[in-house]
Length: 369
Image 1 (cartoon, rainbow, N blue to C red):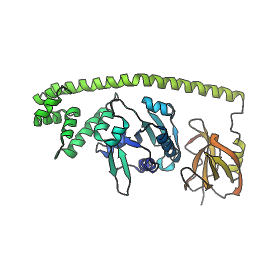
Image 2 (cartoon, rainbow, N blue to C red):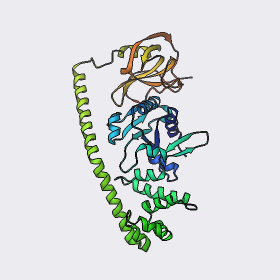
Image 3 (cartoon, helix red, strand yellow):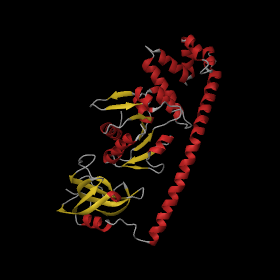
Image 4 (tube, rainbow, N blue to C red):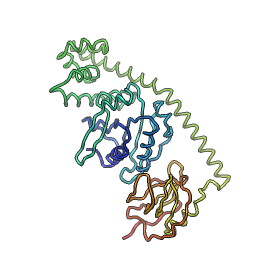
């Protein structure tokens, strides 16, 4: 069963028509190779239009980039993964990882053509990587991925072995990692095994039934794949380290400037605090839309951004009206002023210790009936 926070992420992706395919642990769950995970991993189309749609998803889920690299097209096209943490109450602290290019995996257009679409009770529909593509994506240098490759293939055989296609048999013979099953298939389909021998030489040991030789060959095959993955990621990891160093230098420079001047506080700092303490409504422009809100909490996020948690009562919104308080980036707020309205109490869901903030400047007390 897919947890509700994960469903929130998936349904939001679907709502904004992002060209994305679920992969990773959650896709393994759908394919019958269960893996406990609170992350959602996606393969996405790396073009400007699709990233704009994805940004709407991230805004709605109140997701922030974790560390490096930043959410930019050039990093996705190079093969980097971009990581986010959600702070929406219905997907709280769910991590989202997105990639558009992976070692040994077909281009997105091919992945999309081969995708699997799953419909769940309640009408939810999700697109994900096919088992063959998911297996290829899982052949990494990480220890945890290889048992998952094995379980995916075993689950696929269990589901299809009564009426396998030639493509199924070819896939299993080329990818299976369970010695007993590989021996069984090689002996059941010797002609196909012979045609595939050049692509996977260890099939000779499978046909002979030599279990020890086959186990040794499978281990060598895994070691070779891990090394290929390490070499693929080596330049990407070097770039990540350089980005981390740049980020550290930038942070240090900001801290140094802050110690010398108090000018780093947002120009609306005092007005935001006064509005919360006085329970005054606010009106401002945000991403091209006029918002009228009831401010709940003002503070600093874990990524060092000044943020405002506020309930939008009127105005316009890119993601539509919501019954919950949204997180606004103060740097994107302009034309801030009092709306001339007062409100009596915070939202019932209000948390004075807002978990999306590491430092709180002002907040309303907890809601009381």
